[in-house]
Image 1 (cartoon, rainbow, N blue to C red):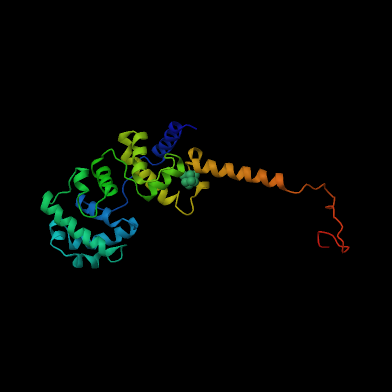
Image 2 (cartoon, helix red, strand yellow):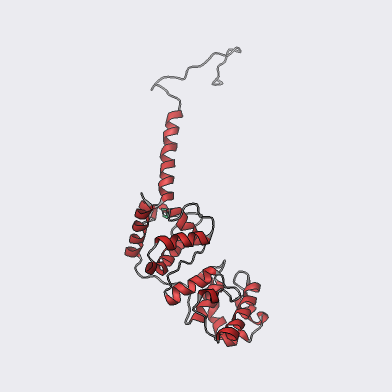
Length: 249
Ligand code: SF4
């Protein structure tokens, strides 16, 4: 299968099976999505969604959050991974948002990355989700699934994966494709136990093809190395000096 055929098959399947997908994070404004994505690093969306309602009630605007100290933010996010550093990032991010951007989340992805706690992936998520920018945010799921499927080959970094996917997936489809790959990694092609038997992408998946090839060649090797016995015959026993034989009988 060529790379082109693989991309076409996978994107076609997603388009048919998951025509409309969106972020599982709950938010009502760019500011809330920014906060939610920042909190979601190394944490599940579900846990973030349980946490943000009280956080947004206490700090409903960038201005309210900018006026708070990390210590005041911490109690609201203590159940989330890395609460100390995330509380520091939220306070500093809100202050910069108010000080340099008039309290508005900047649409320029480079400017976005200047905010404390905001890296390339977070900026791309905001760009893709809020403004339909033709970018591919690569998180751990997108990175893993792309490599297993064969959309990337030997990619060592999220940036390399991002560049490969952006080169091969039509621009307008990128924001959707991000959700497709992410959700597939979260619910089907999980890190520890991919559900290959139930996976609709199996016909195009490189890992699945490799696994099946290995299983077939393993079975053939097993058959080839098995001792040949005629039916009803008994393995020939070489006599031992002590009168027994090599079978120990
Ligand atoms: S066939 Fe298996 S490895 Fe391939 S994408 Fe599906 S779940 Fe992942």
